[in-house]
Length: 164
Image (cartoon, rainbow, N blue to C red; front, side, top):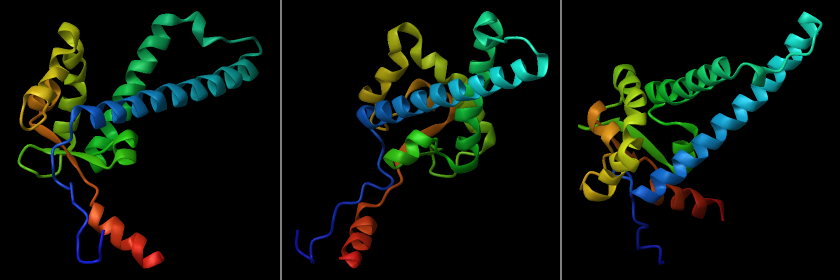
């Protein structure tokens, strides 16, 4: 690529199924790792405080509720604050309102609560990403949101070239 040719910018373009799946996989991995680490620390502290061996796996209902609450917070809070989760930040994507405005708290909560609906009926809600021009899944439609690239390849290339 010559200096007069500009690198393409995908900023603002809708994100497809592959990038969204990879982002979600990173988020699921992060949720599991952080929850496991926190659970281990909590078990250790409770064992010290109570003076007896405590295993959270002995309380499956409470553990299931705790991981569901953690997953909700993991998705809803960063979406409300910055429009992206850790997985989205790694892959350079962001969730915005359908009209391009920042997502906001109410839409982030609605999107997070609607996410399980996209898994129903063998993942039909995610099939919409492939079928729709705006690449919206069912939970995006419910929350009036869209996932777009938020990484400008041209700006990154300029920064890279100035370092050489």
